[in-house]
Length: 367
Image 1: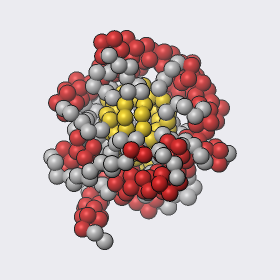
Image 2: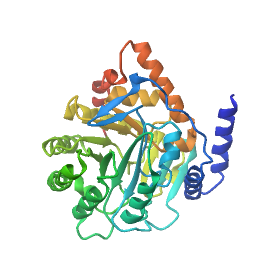
Image 3: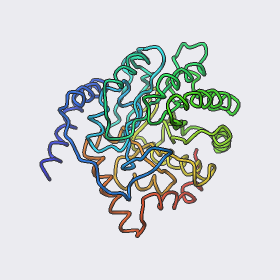
């Protein structure tokens, strides 16, 4: 075992001695203080991906929910991430749900959280990003609605207008299970209304900014196949720029070993989410066709699982819970594996492998 791996494992064990939310906060503070290691970006043009005017240097991103308040953008990029998505950010600051609200299922390499969009709000996060300065990777800003908002669509529009000038891309998060009623926005008519409003708000910023900021939609894995097809139709009809598949699940697989923790309310992430989220990803790829950008999220904790997401239809992948159990070296391992994979498959770019196994995964049942 290398010194790097030893330090990584010791760090994981130390953090797991803390309460999960305390561990999360300590990790953010460590990163923000500059104490985290630096892993140079993998220099391989075969891993690059273009989305509009953006170039992703590699396909591995930090999912939203980790750096909710944009406190560690630059340090995360120094870990080797090709992109970092901060948030979810709501117009007004909010405390989120009562504690405890984060639970490790260590035997299952999983996490359950019911944070409830706890964040510092638009003003604080906007100012923090402004002070971050030049970045070495792509920045996504994930926006949402306040729990007590009387007009949630208006909250998303505010988010788009506020952060369009700072974001390389924007994500509308309508899939958290921890804000009551939020997932109702995935229903066909409600989604069409939402997307028309936020895409219109984005387009209004184009002349001022000199660019069209890509807008992604983040969905849940807990939708039926019929609903997934409807979502895809609405996304295409309203010219959203891509989808992120998927958020956490409210399902509890019978295979979970930690049945006590599994009873906690909230969204389940980590290894048990992998199959469900990958099936949803593949079905989405089949529904939207080969061209719409898709980010695959859920259960990525090994280089092989990252590759499987690509094969199932993802142009980019994101992770979060995988870092809880594998530590900071995971990003580097994934990128090196994917670089070797491209060479071994005899293709010129990783994107040539996107969706090659989509039919295998799409034939599986979501439920």
